Image 1 (cartoon, rainbow, N blue to C red):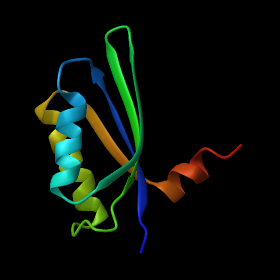
Image 2 (image 1 turned 135 degrees about the horizontal axis):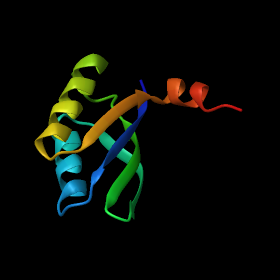
Image 3 (image 1 turned 180 degrees about the vertical axis):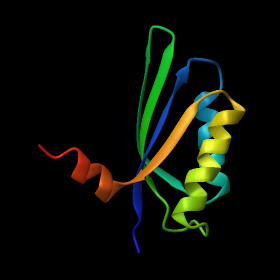
Image 4 (image 1 turned 60 degrees about the vertical axis):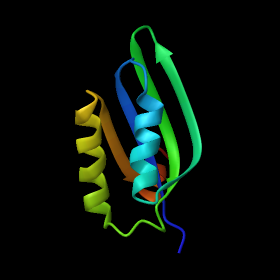
Length: 91
């Protein structure tokens, strides 16, 4: 079953953010399908479309895992199911 979600990463820019987040996702079998990132002045922002269908963690645990991983590097990392994200952003 295909399970897709949106991951957002926000915080002060520093070396290694993309590598850290990629390693955290890879370690729990979450695949990055698409990624966009930018730095606005000193702020780093990234949004990713991910597939978590191979991840053995439930969604609540994934959310906590990413929050903890963000805290390790001083970033805010959030995940939201794609269907919820789409519903919230329809005009």
